[in-house]
Image 1 (spheres, one colour):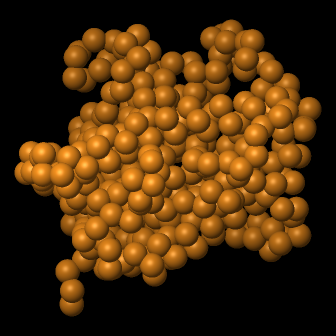
Image 2 (tube, rainbow, N blue to C red; image 1 turned 90 degrees about the vertical axis):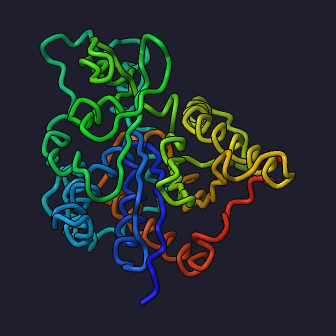
Length: 350
C-alpha cells in the first residue's frame, strides 16, 4: 500500500458557515490515503479542529477516523440545537434556495433588531443576564485528547485585545477559554479574560479572525509536511458591488476576515519567488505548497445573517457542499499533494 499523503489543514472561521468545513473534514476522514499532520484553526475552525483532534486520538494512536467523524457530527448537532439533523433532511428539498434563506434572515425583524443592537449596545450591558452560548458546547470537549501529544498538532488563534497581536495557542495551552477566545466576536460576546499560560498575566482576547484567519505560520514547522490545505469559507471574490447597507456590511466582514490570510499567502508567494530566482534556498525558508478547498459560488449566496443564525437546513446544505468540494479536490489534485501547490499564487497576487 502506498504511503499516505501527509497534509496540514488551515481552517477558516465564519460562524455557522463552518459547517462547510465539517463536510470537508468528513470527506477527508473517509480517505485512508490522507493523513492529517497539523491543524491551524480560527473561530469555527478552532471548534472543528478541536473536535477533529479529540476524535482522532481516541484510539491512542491518532488514527480513529470514525471517532473524529462522530465528534464533528456531535459538535454541529449541538450548534444546530437538535439531537438528529437527519430529521431535517427530508424537508430540506422543499426549503427555498440558499440566497432566499439568507435574504429572509436579513429581512427578519428579529435579526435586524439584533444587528442594530450589536452596533450600539455593548455585550457588557447585559449584566447578570449575559451568557456565551458557545461555552456549553466548548466545555464538552475532552481536553485530555485535545491536548494530547499524539495525532495532529493543533493550533488555534485569538487576538490580544490590548496589543492587537495574534496569540496562537497549542499543546497543553488548549482549553475552553482558548477556543472561546478564538471565536469571540466583540460585538456579540464579552472578551475572554484568562491567565495567559505563556506570560502568567491576565489578558483579554477577541476573535482570531482579525489577526489570523487562520494563521498559517504555525504550520511552517520543518517536522510537518510542506502541504497546507486551506479550507476557505469567506468568499475571496464577489462579482457585484454591494449597494445596500446589509450587503455592504457583509462584504466588509468578508474582506476583514480574509485580509490576514491574504497577507500570509502573499508572503508565501514572495518567498517562493526568491527560491525560484535562486536568491534563497528551500533550506533557508520553507517552500510551502498551498492548496485550497472552497465553494465561493455557494458562499456568495449566503451572508453574515446565515453565519449568525445556525439554521439546520443551511448547516446540512453546507456540510453536503463541503463533502462535494473535498471530493472534487481529491479527484483533481490527489497526485499533486506532497509534490506541488495547486493554488496559483502568482495569478492571485499578479
